[in-house]
Amino acid sequence: DFGFSGTYDLSTKYIAGRALFRKTELAPYFAIMDRPDLHGILDADLFFKGRSDDLDAMSAGLDVADIDIQLMKMKLIKGKGIKASYEDGRLTIPESKLILLEEGSMTVRAATDRNRNLDLTAGGMIPIDIISAFYPDLTDLTGIARFSLTGHGPVRNPRLSGTITIDEMGYVIPYNGQVINDVTAVLSLSPDALIIKDLKGRLDTGTFTASGRMGLKDFRPQSIDVSSHGRALPFIMPDSMNALFDMNARLTGTPDKTLLSGDTLILEGSYYK
Image (cartoon, rainbow, N blue to C red; front, top):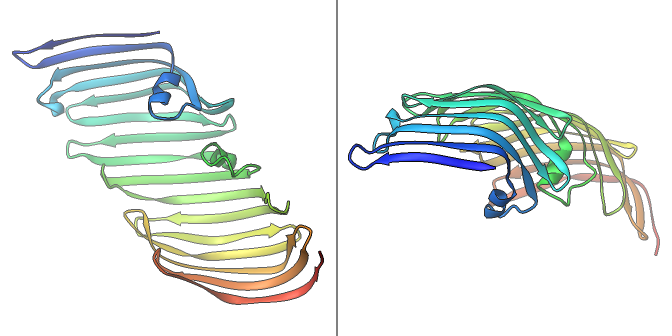
């Protein structure tokens, strides 16, 4: 159910309202946003009051008793007791916890001041297979991503920094059934760069490593310099070829022009038809 009540005084421009969500189905709202695959339930109270011509003098509050969002039959996000308030030009979100894909969790806290500067901290653990909810072609993903992020500065363009750690990621390549597994990595994020540290993993029985840096501006890629090394990597082209090779590669450049260089040593192989 959904209910709303409100008043507005034309002479003083004073406005006040309250919206009540009681086990409200969210599917119609997601459909408006062109996401008919999403649905869920919301149980929350929202209120606001103040002069409509002075937003800094407005006050508002949101109290989410329960929210449960699903993608088809996949449980995406669940949360309880989430609160937010806006008073004297300041937005405050006390520390809140969300459950992600039943197995993951995220804790977030945020606040803004009267000058629209953000102070954000977030951290948690997310199952990597959440990617398949947004990119359906990437199925059979496994592993965990742990993250710790902070954000400071103007709300429209905060300076984000933090660390993302990938543990035991795996993926089955649909084309040939080969398995990428035991992938671990540490990613360091700053306003200027994304640095890849100690990425390593296996392709079937072979091993590979990678490291490098992606330069950023407003969190858009500006440059890239990534090196990768592989040892005894198998390659299978169904019904055509099997090979085992070592390789060293480096990718450098910008989004407009990149250069891939390196060398490959075929250790053994067979071609058949």
